Image 1 (cartoon, chains in turn cyan, purple):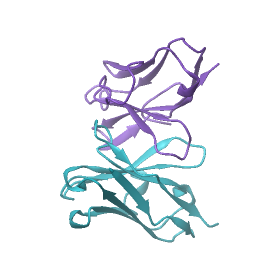
Image 2 (cartoon, one colour):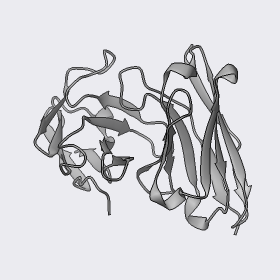
Image 3 (cartoon, one colour):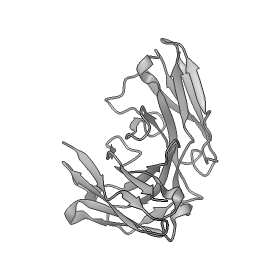
Image 4 (cartoon, chains in turn purple, blue):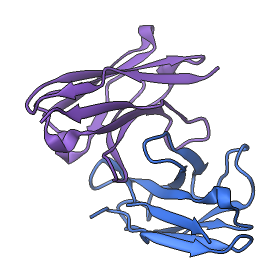
Length: 117
Length: 111
């Protein structure tokens, strides 16, 4: 079964850090661009960042540039989102998605990041 | 303010047809493909309905269609069912921002 599973979310104080993980099973992540998309409570979808197959290309939404860093380990079939200097407005459900705009896209169930203040 | 503009809400009766517009610019839809997602419950993973402007994954019924003209994209849904009530999002890559952009979302109500 093709599946993507996010983990690492939780309660965090403003200014704190979290590392989200996205692990795939049933297929190899290594052939796909991987995106992170978030949804704040009561709000729409917001693309956060993406990374290409070998990790050589990364793009970020302006609001997280300099604070969030994407990486991937194809040997572990996983992608990681390091989030530093977290703000209240980063509170959201975070999804990872492979091939987000293609026929073989796959999304995880999401992991919640919440501001503890 | 989203880069892609969608109406906040649309509504129609069961069995009827509805269209949802997505207005962009030459930086995004005008020069890149558009795609559409359906999210039936906020906070749960959305489902891809349309990719490459007008292509449907095989699991998506042909009641759903997509089109693109110049800098705008449109999602059409025919034979509306109560199960179609959901939030719908368009998206595209934006060359100026070097970012993927979503519309603000449209809530469909089937009266």
